[in-house]
Image: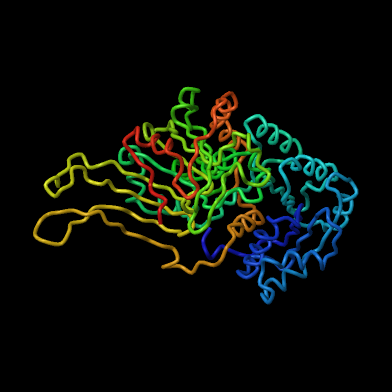
Length: 488
């Protein structure tokens, strides 16, 4: 879609189940205000929030305005279009009232609720024919990850939803895909022939994908202790980035073409045997330490965490894609809590030149070229290469060309949901996951879950504020490689 084709989304009623939760207040409402500011919301847009609290429209509006500037004119315009409906999500009465309050036009149902309620709410919506489309109007269902907690539950969720609503009506959200730099991966690759020409096994030695967080589990101890880093991050966030790196050029930018190529990537992830899991997957857990200037307690001391649990807060792994482009190229993935800094990035480490010509310059092995795509927080792309030092002698030094988005473009304060909400309203599913891709991702990590489920071992400890456990460093060192440092 070109800039000239970006028009306001069609008039839609956005029905948000769980309107009083953090997701709606912190992310969805500010994103909608930003869309209004850019002229991308039609005048007929409205929000109908559902919750269990006893509130009226004005009380809800005050609560939702907490994370929006009070004097913002776009918030004032959006504010008057918000209404509230209270009740039990399992009670038929609330759906009868919802049907009476919805006009025959477009409606989207956003389930900002715990995943356990997805099927129950969808069944109620279907029973009351609220998902039926007709007379040129759409009805869409939005759900937020996690999409299951293992392969069996992901399949069960997909089967349940697809009995109630058609796949083109389902929008599975992974907010990572709303980030500008994630979407720019395709532009960097497919719009620049010099990059795409070396984006393959002939030139790339290995790929690193990192999603590091400086924060601990905070108040999410109960949820996190039953989930862990692997389930929370790998089959969704990290695999989304893996798909962007590994995909083949689509035959068009139609949503179906792009999603087809991305799905092929996750289906090509080689399944690990139990021995390979033990050898190529590392799990860790943070102990007490200092992150920046802040002292961090150990994970086992966090609120609502079972001190006897074996839940991991860090995972690193070595994977392969069995495709023509990437055969033999290892992909190293890692994610963790309470690490040295917040950093999501993709690193393509290129192969060394076949013959080192500058050994007399003091380099026994020339540093190889490296392309780093920074997703957050300092969005940009850098390229490391060798240059000649000034002077009569031919001596080399590693240097970097650095592109930062903030230096070239005006970056609005976005939540990452703006593009996702807009694309949903215009019916563009490019950035949303298909059922088969979800299941393929869980199929790739299920062998790891199986081995860990049988093991009585405990995660490797790493100090809060570090780059992770030493076992992860040994995973790379065994191959003669090292992680890209998280140090600022």
